[in-house]
Image (cartoon, rainbow, N blue to C red; front, side, top):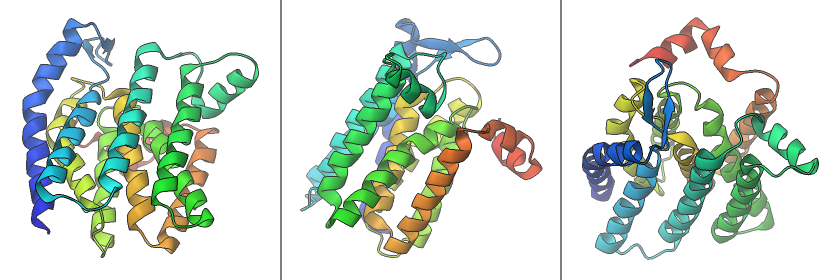
Length: 271
């Protein structure tokens, strides 16, 4: 493990550990809350912590180790904008219209929703980011789809306490173990450091990350896959993401998980 991977993990853990209670208190005082399954009012949009800590942590790494490429900056700019879109949807979102298809249908019927804005702007950000990291038109298309679909993919699972964080941790560990080039692993190590203290609160239904959290989780997985994995793995992941999105428009992943003993066991760990 490169020493700055360990530094990114430890620094993000410490920063998050200190920031969590402060941000929770701030959101409670600002009445940015929602009811959990116990009907308790808990802070929502706690994923804003992800944005703060990831920017501070990776910015610090940039200063200390002087990365001589633009990846760090491109990632952080896209990451911040994706987080802002999620926060906008959290604070003003239309709750009655569900699913990506529902928001797009509403748009073409003349009704603009925050979900449609998030979908269109999120994909546009994916296009812009992809233009910086791609070497050909083929790469540009594949990378844009990976980033855009991954960003929404994690959001599809953010329906139960801790589920989105568990999904990110599982996929990140698979990526780190199977990526022998180790390119850009530090962005995953940094996020894992954030999630270690955060996930405990999420699993116990003390906080909700909101779209600002799930969007940034997905965006991070997407840009990592686009820049760090070999072409065949990228194509396979893209096909799986498309299949998952098609299924999501027809069935509930929560029902699938609840009806499968093994998946239900994994889903309930820590609650």
